[in-house]
Amino acid sequence: MSAPVQSIPVRRITGEETTLADYSGKVILVVNVASKCGLTPQYEALEKLYRQYNDQGLVVCGFPSNDFAGQEPGTNEDIQSFCSLNFGVDFPLYEKITVVGEAKHPLYHALIEAQPTAVSTSAEPFEEDLRRFGVQPNEAPEILWNFEKFVVSRNGEVAARFAPNTTPDDPALVSAIESELARN
Image 1 (cartoon, one colour):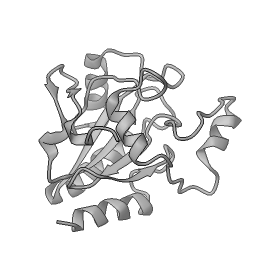
Image 2 (spheres, rainbow, N blue to C red):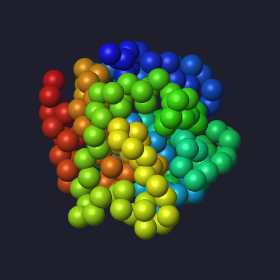
Image 3 (cartoon, one colour):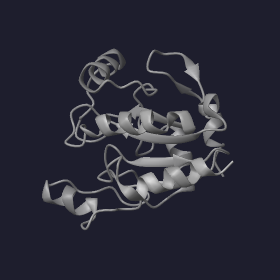
Image 4 (tube, rainbow, N blue to C red):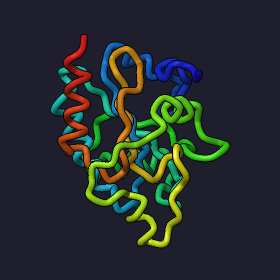
């Protein structure tokens, strides 16, 4: 069994060492993000979700990753500036990390181990979208692409995992978040 998600060391996008224990007692939505992806507009909806539910205890945590077609090539400073200027992102961002393969960050090791299968809410699995673009999807349980989402409960358990094309306003994701927020 991996270390509890909230105890795993991470770095804020500004370089300070921390853990997600800063958000103990809150529901955390962990998302691997990228600035040059077809799914990048999800930043706007993630920020909206964060603002809508933050007072109830939701925190969105963005982890930039350059693992998929080089779609996050910038420095941490570039990423922070891009997110702020283009999408008004105010939710916490962290240093760019690796989310797939042998070098994957321990946080993503723990998330994937806890929820090896991502729920797809679209009529067509995201893997088919990738194949249409000539991309061979990663084998389960690996992260498929940018903007895969993990819902972490108030007590640190990984409650749900959603495919990249599940938008932040998708009823299934919102329901999973609301369900966790309702638990005390």
